[in-house]
Amino acid sequence: MQVFVVSDGTGDTGTAIVRAAMLQFRSSWKIRVFGEVRRPAEAKRAVVRAAEVNALLVFSLVEHNMVEVLKREAQQRGVVALDLLGPLIAKVAQHLQAEPKHQPGLLHGMSDDYFSRIDAVEFAVNHDDGANVHTLYDADIVLTGVSRTSKTPLSMYLAQRGYKTGNVPLVPRVDPPRELLDLDSERVFGLLIDASELMTIRQARLRAIRASPTSEYTDIAAVTEEVEGARMICRRNGWRIVDVTGKAVEENAARLMEFYELRHGS
Image 1 (spheres, rainbow, N blue to C red):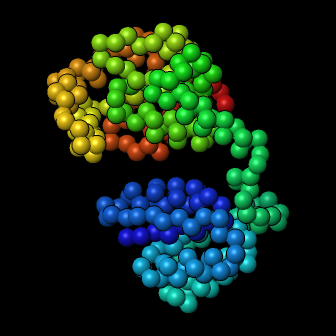
Image 2: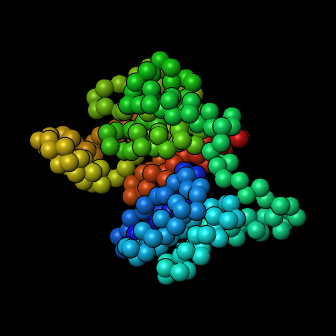
Image 3: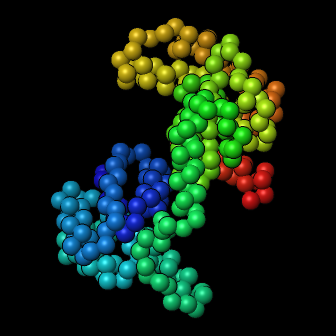
């Protein structure tokens, strides 16, 4: 199944909603994003392509004329189209007794929040996989854990939401860097995972890069010892443990943001 997301911005909002919905189904699916759709011809083109592959089309357009063009084109071509924002905007307008702006691009405009997110992404890139630990004290969140516990994807996801995030690997039989140990423990989160799942992930990674299997890296006994060692380090240093077993990056990020906001009263 294909789902087309049509947006007058980046398409992040629609993509997140579609993913949350599609995870409830066992069938395979693929998302295609049509971003920065600001002209009627662009909206029509997305509908035509949806009709060609029998895709479900969801859209988050705010300009009234664009919405009408897309709906009309979808109806003519027999494409199922779902308006993600229109009904909500209408309810808010009714509740506030106010007229909405119907202006596209406001979510990702050049606001202070936008530049804050840019800074956070730059910070995450510069503090990935144990780099620049001497400036980790500037981080909002620091992730640590053994190899292949989604530290980098989580760091980048959190950064895109404005959290300056660094990550530091825990290496077997190597002490964590002093800079990590000296951080405020409330800003550090230890990522743990079931050993058998971690072994499977590592085996898949080695196959993907066509590398020879290494005994300790994928041996279940060694992996179990590595995970338990990481657990002990987290507990000893008072770091909150987050179990990432079987969970998507978005789900783990939501938990981390919730923990952070609760601790820091934001």
